[in-house]
Length: 322
Image (tube, rainbow, N blue to C red; front, top):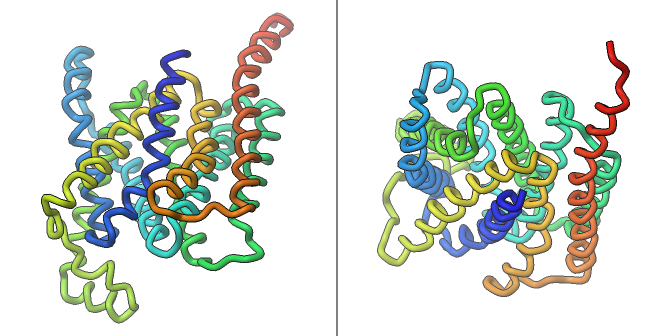
Protein backbone atom coordinates (compact mmCIF):
# COMPACT_ATOMS: atom_id res chain seq x y z
CA UNK A 1 0.00 0.00 0.00
CA UNK A 2 2.85 2.42 0.89
CA UNK A 3 4.42 1.76 -2.51
CA UNK A 4 1.09 2.64 -4.13
CA UNK A 5 1.08 6.04 -2.41
CA UNK A 6 4.60 6.71 -3.72
CA UNK A 7 3.46 5.93 -7.27
CA UNK A 8 0.51 8.31 -6.81
CA UNK A 9 2.81 11.11 -5.60
CA UNK A 10 5.25 10.69 -8.51
CA UNK A 11 2.48 10.55 -11.12
CA UNK A 12 0.71 13.57 -9.60
CA UNK A 13 3.77 15.84 -9.72
CA UNK A 14 4.78 14.78 -13.24
CA UNK A 15 1.24 14.97 -14.65
CA UNK A 16 0.71 18.40 -13.08
CA UNK A 17 3.66 19.76 -15.08
CA UNK A 18 2.67 18.11 -18.38
CA UNK A 19 0.66 20.97 -19.88
CA UNK A 20 3.20 23.50 -18.61
CA UNK A 21 6.09 21.66 -20.28
CA UNK A 22 4.15 21.47 -23.56
CA UNK A 23 3.45 25.22 -23.39
CA UNK A 24 7.16 25.83 -22.79
CA UNK A 25 8.00 24.24 -26.14
CA UNK A 26 6.63 27.51 -27.54
CA UNK A 27 5.17 26.04 -30.71
CA UNK A 28 8.55 24.67 -31.85
CA UNK A 29 6.94 21.33 -32.63
CA UNK A 30 3.83 20.41 -34.59
CA UNK A 31 1.20 19.12 -32.08
CA UNK A 32 1.05 15.70 -33.75
CA UNK A 33 4.84 15.56 -34.01
CA UNK A 34 5.40 16.26 -30.29
CA UNK A 35 2.81 13.61 -29.41
CA UNK A 36 4.68 11.03 -31.51
CA UNK A 37 8.11 12.02 -30.16
CA UNK A 38 7.22 12.02 -26.48
CA UNK A 39 5.33 8.72 -26.54
CA UNK A 40 8.00 7.02 -28.66
CA UNK A 41 10.63 8.25 -26.18
CA UNK A 42 8.53 7.18 -23.21
CA UNK A 43 7.98 3.69 -24.63
CA UNK A 44 11.65 3.19 -25.55
CA UNK A 45 12.70 4.43 -22.11
CA UNK A 46 10.64 1.70 -20.45
CA UNK A 47 11.53 -1.05 -22.94
CA UNK A 48 14.77 -2.28 -21.25
CA UNK A 49 12.93 -2.72 -17.93
CA UNK A 50 10.10 -4.59 -19.65
CA UNK A 51 12.47 -6.88 -21.58
CA UNK A 52 14.33 -7.72 -18.37
CA UNK A 53 11.07 -8.53 -16.59
CA UNK A 54 9.79 -10.64 -19.50
CA UNK A 55 13.04 -12.62 -19.57
CA UNK A 56 12.63 -13.47 -15.89
CA UNK A 57 9.08 -14.71 -16.40
CA UNK A 58 9.81 -16.27 -19.85
CA UNK A 59 6.88 -14.24 -21.14
CA UNK A 60 6.63 -13.59 -24.89
CA UNK A 61 4.45 -11.30 -26.97
CA UNK A 62 1.77 -13.16 -28.88
CA UNK A 63 -0.47 -11.99 -31.72
CA UNK A 64 -3.25 -11.56 -29.13
CA UNK A 65 -0.99 -9.29 -27.04
CA UNK A 66 -0.05 -7.19 -30.05
CA UNK A 67 -3.71 -6.70 -30.99
CA UNK A 68 -4.47 -5.64 -27.42
CA UNK A 69 -1.61 -3.12 -27.30
CA UNK A 70 -2.54 -1.73 -30.70
CA UNK A 71 -6.01 -1.05 -29.27
CA UNK A 72 -4.76 0.62 -26.08
CA UNK A 73 -2.12 2.55 -28.02
CA UNK A 74 -4.72 3.81 -30.47
CA UNK A 75 -7.01 5.18 -27.76
CA UNK A 76 -4.16 6.68 -25.73
CA UNK A 77 -1.65 8.04 -28.24
CA UNK A 78 -3.55 8.47 -31.50
CA UNK A 79 -6.87 9.75 -30.15
CA UNK A 80 -6.67 11.02 -26.57
CA UNK A 81 -3.23 12.63 -26.63
CA UNK A 82 -3.74 14.26 -30.04
CA UNK A 83 -6.97 15.84 -28.73
CA UNK A 84 -5.11 16.82 -25.56
CA UNK A 85 -2.26 18.41 -27.51
CA UNK A 86 -4.65 20.36 -29.73
CA UNK A 87 -6.60 21.57 -26.68
CA UNK A 88 -3.45 23.13 -25.21
CA UNK A 89 -3.07 25.12 -28.42
CA UNK A 90 -6.56 26.62 -28.05
CA UNK A 91 -6.73 27.45 -24.34
CA UNK A 92 -4.65 27.93 -21.16
CA UNK A 93 -2.46 25.09 -19.88
CA UNK A 94 -4.12 25.24 -16.46
CA UNK A 95 -7.61 24.99 -18.01
CA UNK A 96 -6.68 21.87 -20.00
CA UNK A 97 -5.07 20.35 -16.89
CA UNK A 98 -8.25 20.90 -14.88
CA UNK A 99 -10.64 19.55 -17.54
CA UNK A 100 -8.47 16.53 -18.34
CA UNK A 101 -8.64 15.69 -14.66
CA UNK A 102 -12.33 14.86 -15.17
CA UNK A 103 -11.27 11.50 -16.64
CA UNK A 104 -11.47 9.59 -13.30
CA UNK A 105 -15.21 10.28 -13.30
CA UNK A 106 -15.44 8.25 -16.50
CA UNK A 107 -12.79 5.72 -15.40
CA UNK A 108 -14.59 4.88 -12.15
CA UNK A 109 -17.98 4.75 -13.92
CA UNK A 110 -16.72 2.57 -16.79
CA UNK A 111 -14.83 0.32 -14.35
CA UNK A 112 -18.01 -0.19 -12.33
CA UNK A 113 -20.11 -0.89 -15.44
CA UNK A 114 -17.75 -3.09 -17.44
CA UNK A 115 -15.23 -4.46 -14.91
CA UNK A 116 -17.76 -4.83 -12.07
CA UNK A 117 -15.50 -2.96 -9.64
CA UNK A 118 -17.25 -1.96 -6.44
CA UNK A 119 -18.31 1.63 -5.85
CA UNK A 120 -18.77 2.90 -2.31
CA UNK A 121 -21.49 5.50 -1.75
CA UNK A 122 -18.81 7.93 -0.60
CA UNK A 123 -16.99 7.46 -3.92
CA UNK A 124 -20.05 8.75 -5.78
CA UNK A 125 -20.23 11.74 -3.41
CA UNK A 126 -16.52 12.45 -3.99
CA UNK A 127 -17.01 12.38 -7.76
CA UNK A 128 -19.87 14.88 -7.52
CA UNK A 129 -17.88 17.17 -5.21
CA UNK A 130 -14.78 17.04 -7.43
CA UNK A 131 -16.83 17.69 -10.57
CA UNK A 132 -18.43 20.69 -8.83
CA UNK A 133 -14.96 22.06 -8.13
CA UNK A 134 -13.92 21.61 -11.76
CA UNK A 135 -17.11 23.36 -12.97
CA UNK A 136 -16.42 26.28 -10.63
CA UNK A 137 -12.89 26.64 -12.01
CA UNK A 138 -14.02 26.43 -15.65
CA UNK A 139 -16.87 28.89 -14.96
CA UNK A 140 -19.09 27.85 -17.92
CA UNK A 141 -21.03 31.14 -17.80
CA UNK A 142 -17.90 32.94 -19.00
CA UNK A 143 -16.37 30.53 -21.51
CA UNK A 144 -13.71 32.21 -23.63
CA UNK A 145 -12.19 29.16 -25.37
CA UNK A 146 -15.07 26.73 -26.14
CA UNK A 147 -13.14 24.71 -28.75
CA UNK A 148 -10.20 24.16 -26.44
CA UNK A 149 -12.54 23.08 -23.65
CA UNK A 150 -14.43 20.66 -25.95
CA UNK A 151 -11.17 19.09 -27.13
CA UNK A 152 -9.99 18.70 -23.53
CA UNK A 153 -13.26 16.99 -22.53
CA UNK A 154 -13.00 14.55 -25.46
CA UNK A 155 -9.38 13.86 -24.51
CA UNK A 156 -10.48 13.06 -20.95
CA UNK A 157 -13.22 10.66 -22.10
CA UNK A 158 -10.98 8.76 -24.53
CA UNK A 159 -8.19 8.55 -21.96
CA UNK A 160 -10.70 7.02 -19.55
CA UNK A 161 -11.54 4.39 -22.17
CA UNK A 162 -7.82 3.64 -22.53
CA UNK A 163 -7.45 3.36 -18.73
CA UNK A 164 -10.34 0.91 -18.37
CA UNK A 165 -9.17 -1.26 -21.29
CA UNK A 166 -5.72 -1.32 -19.67
CA UNK A 167 -7.26 -2.28 -16.34
CA UNK A 168 -9.10 -5.12 -18.11
CA UNK A 169 -5.75 -6.29 -19.50
CA UNK A 170 -4.18 -6.40 -16.04
CA UNK A 171 -7.09 -8.50 -14.76
CA UNK A 172 -7.57 -10.94 -17.65
CA UNK A 173 -4.07 -11.23 -19.12
CA UNK A 174 -2.09 -10.31 -15.98
CA UNK A 175 -0.14 -7.50 -17.63
CA UNK A 176 1.65 -5.31 -15.10
CA UNK A 177 1.61 -1.51 -15.19
CA UNK A 178 5.02 -0.95 -16.80
CA UNK A 179 4.49 -3.61 -19.49
CA UNK A 180 1.09 -2.33 -20.56
CA UNK A 181 2.30 1.29 -20.54
CA UNK A 182 5.45 0.53 -22.52
CA UNK A 183 3.83 -1.48 -25.30
CA UNK A 184 0.78 0.80 -25.53
CA UNK A 185 3.14 3.73 -26.13
CA UNK A 186 5.30 1.86 -28.64
CA UNK A 187 2.46 0.45 -30.73
CA UNK A 188 0.47 3.70 -30.44
CA UNK A 189 3.53 5.64 -31.66
CA UNK A 190 3.96 3.26 -34.60
CA UNK A 191 0.30 3.75 -35.55
CA UNK A 192 0.76 7.51 -35.30
CA UNK A 193 3.94 7.32 -37.41
CA UNK A 194 1.99 5.60 -40.19
CA UNK A 195 -0.62 8.37 -40.08
CA UNK A 196 2.12 11.03 -40.11
CA UNK A 197 3.61 9.49 -43.25
CA UNK A 198 0.18 9.56 -44.87
CA UNK A 199 -0.06 13.33 -44.27
CA UNK A 200 2.82 13.76 -46.71
CA UNK A 201 0.75 12.39 -49.58
CA UNK A 202 -0.17 15.39 -51.78
CA UNK A 203 -3.87 14.44 -51.95
CA UNK A 204 -4.23 14.18 -48.16
CA UNK A 205 -2.07 17.24 -47.41
CA UNK A 206 -4.06 19.37 -49.84
CA UNK A 207 -7.33 18.17 -48.32
CA UNK A 208 -6.29 19.16 -44.78
CA UNK A 209 -5.04 22.56 -45.94
CA UNK A 210 -8.34 23.17 -47.77
CA UNK A 211 -10.17 22.29 -44.50
CA UNK A 212 -8.07 24.94 -42.70
CA UNK A 213 -6.24 22.22 -40.72
CA UNK A 214 -2.60 22.88 -41.66
CA UNK A 215 -1.34 21.12 -38.49
CA UNK A 216 -2.49 17.82 -40.05
CA UNK A 217 -0.71 18.36 -43.39
CA UNK A 218 2.91 17.38 -44.01
CA UNK A 219 3.50 16.66 -40.32
CA UNK A 220 7.26 16.66 -39.59
CA UNK A 221 8.96 13.90 -37.64
CA UNK A 222 12.37 15.13 -36.46
CA UNK A 223 12.58 18.76 -37.60
CA UNK A 224 12.73 21.32 -34.81
CA UNK A 225 14.82 19.13 -32.49
CA UNK A 226 17.66 21.43 -31.41
CA UNK A 227 20.06 21.48 -28.46
CA UNK A 228 17.89 24.11 -26.75
CA UNK A 229 14.66 22.15 -27.32
CA UNK A 230 16.13 18.77 -26.31
CA UNK A 231 15.84 19.11 -22.48
CA UNK A 232 12.11 19.87 -22.55
CA UNK A 233 11.55 17.08 -25.11
CA UNK A 234 13.39 14.57 -22.91
CA UNK A 235 11.43 15.72 -19.85
CA UNK A 236 8.14 15.24 -21.71
CA UNK A 237 9.16 11.89 -23.21
CA UNK A 238 11.09 10.18 -20.43
CA UNK A 239 9.84 12.04 -17.36
CA UNK A 240 6.17 12.87 -17.84
CA UNK A 241 5.27 10.22 -20.41
CA UNK A 242 7.48 7.28 -19.43
CA UNK A 243 7.81 7.57 -15.65
CA UNK A 244 4.54 9.45 -15.07
CA UNK A 245 2.21 7.07 -16.90
CA UNK A 246 3.91 3.93 -15.62
CA UNK A 247 3.62 5.27 -12.05
CA UNK A 248 -0.09 5.85 -12.60
CA UNK A 249 -0.73 2.30 -13.80
CA UNK A 250 1.50 0.82 -11.09
CA UNK A 251 -0.64 2.74 -8.61
CA UNK A 252 -3.75 1.17 -10.16
CA UNK A 253 -2.16 -2.27 -9.75
CA UNK A 254 -1.28 -1.62 -6.09
CA UNK A 255 -4.25 0.34 -4.74
CA UNK A 256 -7.02 0.05 -7.35
CA UNK A 257 -8.70 2.44 -9.78
CA UNK A 258 -10.49 4.60 -7.20
CA UNK A 259 -7.45 5.50 -5.11
CA UNK A 260 -5.12 5.81 -8.13
CA UNK A 261 -7.61 8.34 -9.52
CA UNK A 262 -6.47 10.71 -6.76
CA UNK A 263 -3.74 11.66 -9.25
CA UNK A 264 -6.34 13.42 -11.37
CA UNK A 265 -8.26 14.88 -8.44
CA UNK A 266 -5.15 16.53 -6.95
CA UNK A 267 -3.80 17.66 -10.33
CA UNK A 268 -6.48 20.39 -10.86
CA UNK A 269 -5.41 21.95 -7.58
CA UNK A 270 -1.66 21.62 -8.15
CA UNK A 271 -1.41 22.40 -11.89
CA UNK A 272 -2.84 25.98 -11.70
CA UNK A 273 -0.41 26.80 -8.88
CA UNK A 274 2.54 25.48 -10.90
CA UNK A 275 1.27 27.30 -14.03
CA UNK A 276 1.11 30.52 -11.98
CA UNK A 277 4.70 30.03 -10.72
CA UNK A 278 6.24 28.91 -14.02
CA UNK A 279 4.08 30.49 -16.75
CA UNK A 280 2.62 33.43 -14.85
CA UNK A 281 -0.96 32.31 -15.53
CA UNK A 282 -3.27 34.06 -13.08
CA UNK A 283 -5.34 32.30 -10.39
CA UNK A 284 -8.70 34.05 -10.01
CA UNK A 285 -11.27 33.72 -7.23
CA UNK A 286 -13.22 30.97 -9.03
CA UNK A 287 -10.03 28.92 -9.48
CA UNK A 288 -9.10 29.29 -5.81
CA UNK A 289 -12.58 28.20 -4.65
CA UNK A 290 -12.58 25.30 -7.11
CA UNK A 291 -9.19 24.11 -5.88
CA UNK A 292 -10.50 23.93 -2.29
CA UNK A 293 -13.61 21.99 -3.41
CA UNK A 294 -11.47 19.53 -5.42
CA UNK A 295 -9.20 18.90 -2.45
CA UNK A 296 -12.30 18.05 -0.37
CA UNK A 297 -13.40 15.64 -3.11
CA UNK A 298 -9.92 14.06 -3.10
CA UNK A 299 -10.11 13.49 0.64
CA UNK A 300 -13.50 11.79 0.23
CA UNK A 301 -12.07 9.56 -2.51
CA UNK A 302 -9.25 8.53 -0.18
CA UNK A 303 -11.67 7.70 2.64
CA UNK A 304 -13.99 5.79 0.28
CA UNK A 305 -11.10 3.68 -1.09
CA UNK A 306 -10.32 2.53 2.45
CA UNK A 307 -13.95 1.65 3.14
CA UNK A 308 -14.49 -0.62 0.09
CA UNK A 309 -12.32 -3.51 1.41
CA UNK A 310 -14.17 -3.34 4.77
CA UNK A 311 -17.56 -3.54 3.05
CA UNK A 312 -16.40 -6.45 0.88
CA UNK A 313 -15.09 -8.35 3.92
CA UNK A 314 -18.35 -7.73 5.83
CA UNK A 315 -20.40 -9.03 2.90
CA UNK A 316 -18.27 -12.18 2.70
CA UNK A 317 -18.73 -12.87 6.44
CA UNK A 318 -22.51 -12.34 6.39
CA UNK A 319 -23.15 -14.15 3.10
CA UNK A 320 -25.32 -17.24 3.50
CA UNK A 321 -23.72 -20.56 2.49
CA UNK A 322 -25.14 -22.16 -0.65
